[in-house]
Length: 313
Image (cartoon, rainbow, N blue to C red; front, side, top):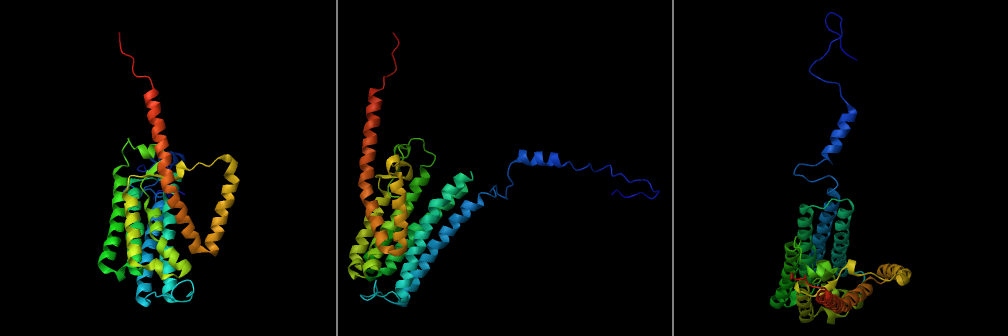
């Protein structure tokens, strides 16, 4: 209702125009989505929050490893038989925290693409999270679990793994805007990705948790294994990516059943299943290099068979 003036006549405020809701809606459509200060869209918060959550899990894995190392030195009795010990429980939690970080890292980018919320900020946050969760955290966990028994060489192996993981991520970031990427254009990755490298680095710990055999905790063995995985991280080997895995339609039902069985095995025999997954991935590394070599030869043959530019008479 409009207020009346002193003389009883309606008061008109000539300084304000009536509010037009349709015009306001059109203005919002033209301006695009609501943005927070700094240019970060609201929908971009979802994948970035998942990345931050992955970072929290990676750091929490370090915390569980520190607790396990300080509570009890894992001896010959600490293994599959000692299911109730504090140290064993915390080693399991440390490993599982990093594995959960790997799962979250695998879905944050896909959610960002689904929401069309890719940003440079998200890419940088993802790399920093990966460096800590899959480089620093596994290195410290393996050092506290085994390598501290050989302090100098053990710390060297832990440093080698963490540094190589960071170098791999830096190489990936440096090539994001490069057009000429032979591996990427063929659907392959260059070197072992950081989450897979962390899973491979944990293989001796998986074996120890599954069997309780202290042979898998020998510092020389664990250190040599970490250095080998560090080399795979920064290598120029072509490794398989999700886009390069395209099963035939005739085996898709069998593949779905196999994935379901793997999930059931992870719930019942977690550590042996993780050992098997690591073994399968290691077998796929040379297979990926062989497949890329075939793709490379096929491309070379196609280029040599292509007719060159015709010369003017």
